[in-house]
Length: 241
Image 1 (cartoon, rainbow, N blue to C red):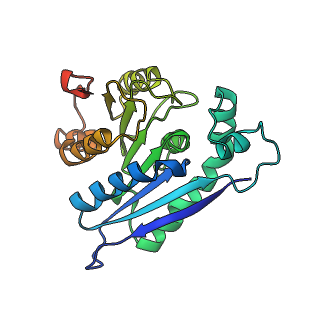
Image 2 (cartoon, rainbow, N blue to C red; image 1 turned 45 degrees about the vertical axis):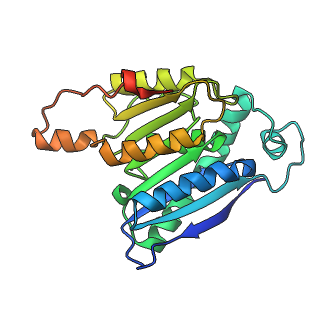
C-alpha cells in the first residue's frame, strides 16, 4: 500500500498564481536536491505555485514487493517498476486534477516534474489523449513501453545522469529518439560523470529549457499546420559537463 503525501506547498506572496508545478518524488533522502529544485522554480517563476509530493510506501506486507523495496530504498527490477507504474497512474492523475482544480489552472499552465521511479509514473501519463500538463519534466525516468503516439499539446524534457544507478542512461537517449520519430515534442539533457539525476546541475538545465524552449505546437500554429520537425538534440551543448 502506498500513498501520496504532500510534502510542501508554496504560493507567491501576492497570491497571483498563473502556473502550477507539481513535483512527484519517491525518496525522502533527496531532500537537499529537492530544495534546490524548488528554489530554482520559485526564483524564475514568481507567479507559480509549487507542490512537492512524496510517493510514500505507507505499508509493505511483502518486503520483496515493489512497495517494500521502495520503503527500503532498494532498486526495482523492470517487472517491479512496471507494477508500480500500472498501480499508481490513476492515483497520480487524481492528485493532479485535484490540484489543478484547487488552483483553477488548465493543463497548459501546469508542469509535472517526476524524480526517480516516480518519474516513470509521470512519463506514462503523457500517453493520455487528454494531456494532464503542458510541460512534463523527468529526472531519471523511463517509459515502461514506448508510446505509439503523443499529443503535440505537451512538451517533454528528459533529464538524466549518465551514471544513474536506478534507470540506465540509454532509456533517455532511446526515448528522445523515439519521440522525434513519432513527431512528439521532447528535449534531452545528460549530465556527465553524475550518479544522481536530481543533481543541481540538471535542475538548472531544467530552468533553462523551460525559459528558452518554444513548444513545437507554437511553431506548428505559426506555420499554419505545415511544419518541419525541429531538431531538439542531443546537440553538443545538450551534454552537461
